[in-house]
Image (cartoon, rainbow, N blue to C red):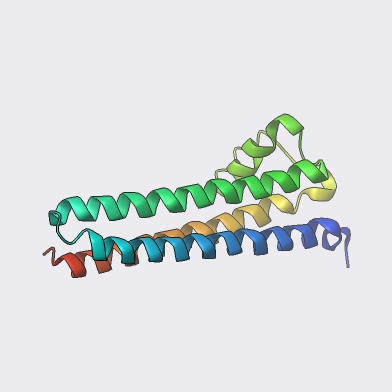
Length: 145
């Protein structure tokens, strides 16, 4: 196989597995937090309870994404794929699929950019699904209609 299948591709797959694991753990924390809130916020006003649940869920998932970007940045740093001062920025730009194009990784590591973007799309979609599920269940539980 070509050189893109060497360390860069395998590294990208391994980091994707790590970030997916982080997302899975964050999802479990959100589920546990929502269950806890359902038991303990029932005495509050419905809108207040919904705001608390959604804000906590969104915050936890945002923190998970920031950690996931850090994992990609660590890979960029270890491999020397981009300048040390720009690894987090570069990882974030790729993870969010923003892709300014102002930084280009070193040639042997170029496959990491699209792999980071694909991973970010998957994980943002996952977070969107989790938030939608939390909102739907919260509305049903609180009988907001």
